[in-house]
Image (cartoon, rainbow, N blue to C red; front, top):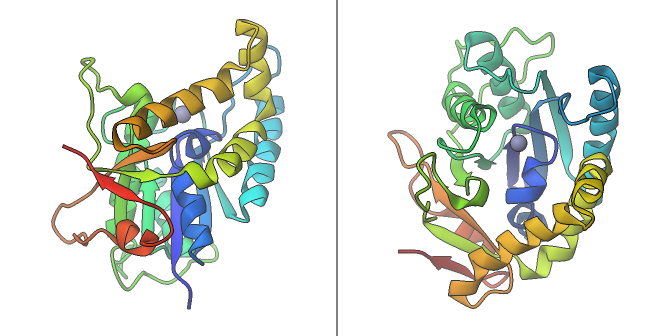
Length: 257
Ligand SMILES: [Zn+2]
C-alpha cells in the first residue's frame, strides 16, 4: 500500500500558499495525497454573499486539488469561527481517519490569526484522537481508528513571524523548485482571491507574494524556492523525519539553525 499525506489548511488557499510544494514532491515520490479545508472561505469576498462565495471557493479548491491529483475534504466551518471544541475535533478526526495519512502538514501553533492557530490545535488533537478506538466521531460512515499516530509537521506562519514580530526559524526547509509551477497552477485556481488582490494592488499580488516568500525561504540554502517546516515532537508522536527520508534523491532538505 502506498504512503499517504494529508495537508490541512484553515481556508481554501492556505495549503497552496505554504505547503503545496512539499505535498507535490510527496506525490512525485509515489504517495497518495489529500487536502483538508476546515473553513468555507465565506468571508473572502466584498461583493458576493457568504453562500455565493462559499460555492465559488469550493469549486476553486476542487479544481486546485484536481491539478495535483489530491483527494479533498471540506469541513464546513465559518471563517473567523474555527473553534477548538468537541464538535470540531470530531469532524477533523474523522477526516484524519478517512485520509489515513503517514504524514500530516498544517499551520503552526502561533500564526497571524486564530483560525490558523485553532486549525493547528485541532489537527494536532485529531492526529492523537484518530488512533483511539473508543473516540467516536459521530460520522454516519465512520472510518476505522488509525494504527499509528502520523508524523505531524507545521508549516511557516504567514510572513515567518510570530505574534510579537519575531522571526520563526523552521527546523528544515524543502527545496520545492521543481514543483513551483505546480504550486503556482494550484494557487491560481483560487481565482476569486487572485482577482480581489489584483484589483486592489494593480499587480498579481497573490502569486507574487507566494513566490517572494518561497524565494526568501530558499535563499540561505541555495535553493530557488523552498517551504519551511517544524515537526511536532511531543510525546507519542514519531520523531524521525519521514519527509526528509522520503525525499532523498528527489529534493534537497536543509536543516536550519
Ligand atoms: Zn488562511
